Image (cartoon, rainbow, N blue to C red; front, side, top):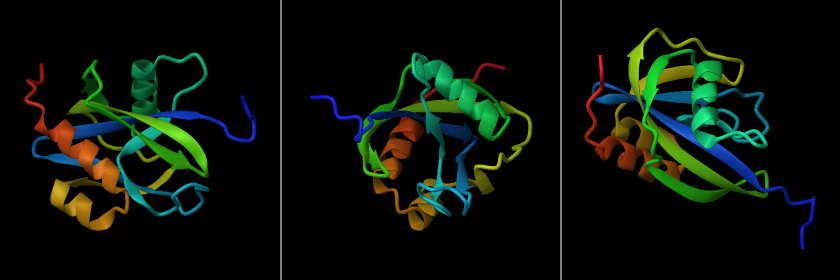
Length: 142
């Protein structure tokens, strides 16, 4: 049975790695879901959109960095967004250049260690996903 009152959300997460840190962002106080929460960059996949293309789009929209996104997701997990089931697909992205430019969706950013992130975010399953992304041994192409 398909009930429109419960929408299924698909979202992507980008763990953007720069040297031994990764990008975390503080959600705007104006956000309906998770205001003022520290997270990694994330966003919903549009209907018919490929998740890999969605994560690249979200990176440009939310921080304007030039990165190289690994094609294969590093993790995925289920959560809830405002009561609706949500599938989160996690990608690792390697920083290449440019400075972070915040969109209206975030009020602050920081390049953090996993220990710093774990201490300030309530999103414990996201911490697990970030750890998986950081464990990857990847070579960044110039």
